[in-house]
Length: 454
Ligand code: BES
Ligand code: MN
Ligand code: MN
Image (cartoon, rainbow, N blue to C red):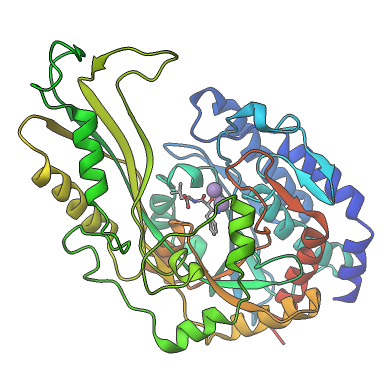
């Protein structure tokens, strides 16, 4: 183990250069103009795996973007770890808010800045380098590994569940490990044991058959924008409770023990507000900020538009109004059920003056994993030794839909070891990874694999 750790310490410059190359590929999975980049990025991922010493490296075609697999399976009595990461990234707009080109990584204040540094190419790269360091210095690994790298996470993983189902035998493992989440703060490592699920809908309200003169018709014809605003405002009560009937029926309430565990992770509302530039926080009454943001379900308006939004004024009564809305879910809410309940809420409440059109987008199941596993204990020890700090157990509000599928399709629990910091700006301009955390994180992964068999 020590040789691998020394190897990592002397490879830092090289890692940065290699990661910069990887980040230079604009692998935006949602952009049809980036299809070639997705193929390049899959090939590049495969090359990284091969260079690290992985065997049977394959770029698997799917109906969408490719899945890259590879393995190293040479220790009979050791556990097999399925390592998952995604090499696709979110779009980069608004481009003018980036300090430099999003696909030309640069370093500032110990941070490497580029799209994909934290979410998730940088973190997938950490796994590859940890294993490469062990193989290069000792010729073998303490564990067996199988990589599954996907290019569709940011678009809801449409192809991966099918891939898991058709390759069950080639994906047999004892545990899945995913690094696509966060630490609590610099120097404060965390193991994430819960992720929220997701439902996503677009709602369109159609009123009169054309945009109307608001002077000629205003007052006599219902305005779809106004109706939409009214309906959306009805979703939550003044205490932040969601009023969609049945929404909370399956929610598992937080136990006192769990609330105590979550409260161990330091959190400062003042700092949180200052970081966001808000003077007040708002959420469901009776819960702390970390609970609201990770262990309670939500309803959000992601976008809303209608009528005239150009410069100047135009007196118009719009024909249509739109909103993109989503809910984050917690166990045991079911995304299919919640989407039905949400649709019903809008359809039943909409007046006859508008027609309601609903379009469903991707979703995913929430997960909470058991904390009493030997793998978690091993990772906790590895993280605390590497970061020289106690490990916090947290739930996170984001979603990685495939994690629930690892359980239902492959029977695997997932260990979530995340290394992005709270200011990593994932999905935002100037996404970054903190380099000291990145290097220590690679070391902590090496330790994790050795402690898996200790
Ligand atoms: N890595 C994130 C999920 C995440 C965010 C985990 C924060 C832990 C903390 C992932 O890439 C992501 O962005 N997921 C999407 C869901 C997907 C279906 C578009 C999300 O959470 O919005
Ligand atoms: Mn991610
Ligand atoms: Mn993401």
